Image (cartoon, rainbow, N blue to C red; front, top):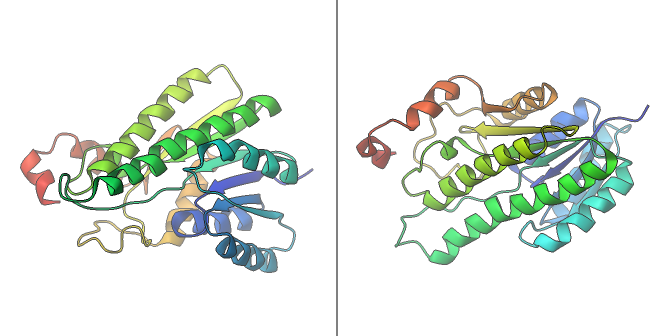
Length: 247
């Protein structure tokens, strides 16, 4: 019997890269995408050296190239034989005050984190419906709970993604397709290392371990880690604006 397979977007760095290592350690074959082909090839070599029984296929992909995603995932499907799990993970963060930071930066965040993710889900659903099963996992954020100061576009992109995935879950509830939405807090990666404050931060290897556990449990939604963000997240919704402004 062949290994289960997982395709991860945004796999060249951060939680995507750490999750690739974690899933390989658990015996999953890998399909990895990101913009930087050379980085992916290096990652592939390192993973296969440590886990020689694991299949690893890599393909360069920019999620903003919406129309190219389906053909890339079809190629990965052909290489792997099937795609059991698709982790919609590619994302960027550009901080700055609305009306001050360049508009192009805000739109770039939306185009990557929301529009690009929607295109990934769209392509994944087509493949899952064709093969008759699948599990979509989306990386949202604790920022989806409340718009955070200096991160308006990022918060909007993640709130939009969470809501989009809730609709996808409703649309697929009679199909053999599982939908998981994960809301990480601060995981120590390059995307947040320039922030002045990172409460409850955890290292990326621990984050990937929690991710993998939640994925294998097929949870519908969760924070990462579960505690304390399962309490802090909902609390963000009701905090006074003056406190949110200080974050």
